[in-house]
Amino acid sequence: MADFKNILTDMKGGVLHLTVNREDKMNALNFETLEELRSIFDEVSDNKEIKAVIITGSGEKAFVAGADISEIASLNEVNARKFSENGQEIFSMIENCHKPVIAVTNGYTLGGGCELAMACHLRIATANAKFGQPEVNLGIIPGYGGTQRLTILIGRGKANELMMTGDMIDAEEAKTLGLVNYVLPTKEEALAKAEELIAKILSKAPLAIGMIIDCVNSAYLPDENGFQTEANSFARCVKSGDYKEGTSAFLAKRQPHFKGE
Ligand code: COA
Image (cartoon, rainbow, N blue to C red; front, side, top):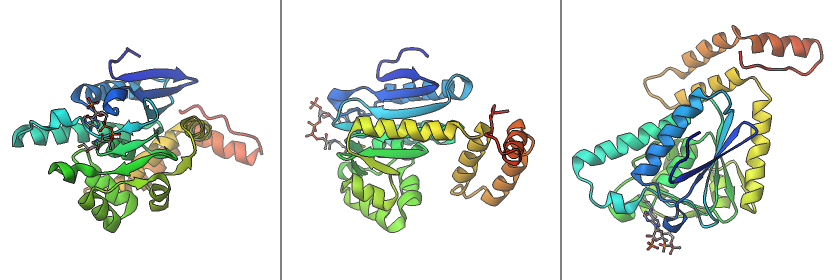
């Protein structure tokens, strides 16, 4: 993996750790950082050595405090649409990645930061994490998929409230609402929990994991029939060696050894 200016990368046992590293700007996502995310996720899909991804923010104060407001301040109608579509496209790459992606949200997880976390498959927060979509304070709305993903994750009423008021919620409330899966006291513990979950997921059949991601995502794509996607994916699973391995291991009362084939 190449070196990037704004994102630190570290491979540990098949898990790619990404750290958004603009600590003096609360890890705000500027265009350059977004494009780095695009390059990284291009490689994640192609590189067989990478089995899973964990994304976190540098330091203790912020996961990502939003898109970089210094770049947002001079948009016009034409490039604002492109700005939004571009961010949506990159976050969809993350959401549709067939390898598990977990956000470990330490501190401020606001605006584009909350949208980035929501594009990941699971979210683990540190106790000091704060979530919100404060774009309304800037006269704009979430533009990287937040209006859609927040509504799906926490329901229409609460999503409307958070986006209309711009209020922040703490980690425990985020967990109660279903925005995060777990809350851990420290970043180290949150990262350890992410690694534990990834180890468990990676012990399962990789093709089935990719199919689950596709089917779950299709639940909120209005042009897709999620039940049909499920039936098609189910049928594709039974063509895999992992299906034969999983079922025969169960019947032989032994542990399965999946190969992702
Ligand atoms: N874009 C660009 N810079 C940002 C930023 C963002 N989204 N969020 C924080 N920063 C910068 C600040 O401008 C400041 O830079 P400076 O030291 O050069 O002045 C630095 O990060 C530290 O932020 P500061 O506001 O001094 O810290 P704080 O602890 O007082 O407040 C926040 C933290 C996150 C509450 C506050 O920075 C904030 O509200 N940020 C914007 C959040 C937002 O609206 N996000 C959605 C954007 S669409």
